[in-house]
Length: 262
Image 1: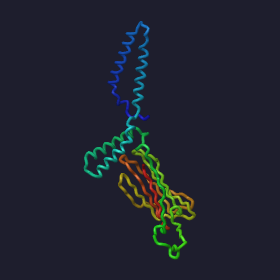
Image 2: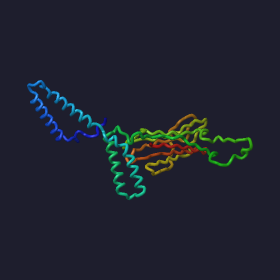
Image 3: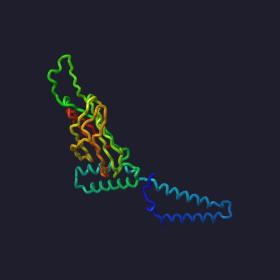
Image 4: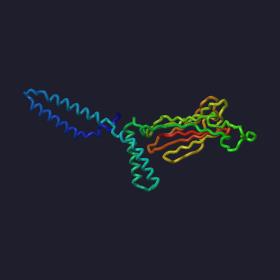
């Protein structure tokens, strides 16, 4: 269990008065039971006082805020929804700021607690498209006719490329540094030559996109190569996050994949 409060936060004066009352109680029990068959009962009372003080300190180590942390993101999302309708709403602005600060304080005092309970990065499946699949027209000389069904090798399963997106750590905390590692897997028998690469990141509903230079220009057959690594720091105001990666090849193929924090 992570300690949520410091021992300096205890009301030591109040604790002192409580212990004085306990001591007076022990003295009264000793005085009342002296020279009787209950003599020595005050010793048991001392044991119970010590056990109670120990239990008090143990309970103080429990982070009760952990029961409430998972609601912070929900509250922030509601405030953002209100601000989307009325950006000048002072109550929503103040409420969102308070929720963010409270969540950050709880996380900093309990480092074992993640940004949001159960949330992590989840990658999707690669979507692939070739120039032929993007064209609606048929291939001259190979039009379909009665009893003949012309098939094109342009389906996603037929294309050799697969985009893999890994994020470390998978569940970052506020202030943590994380890295998005993008790889291209070539399952075919010919090299995949990369023409360009686009990355679009959406954070709290705000989308930013642009081209990025790949680390490699060609992926050999049956090989996997890292095409980009993107380090960043997880921000406390983040309530939603996703990244879409698009890779175009020299042959005109397009590969897309998406990773989402959820």
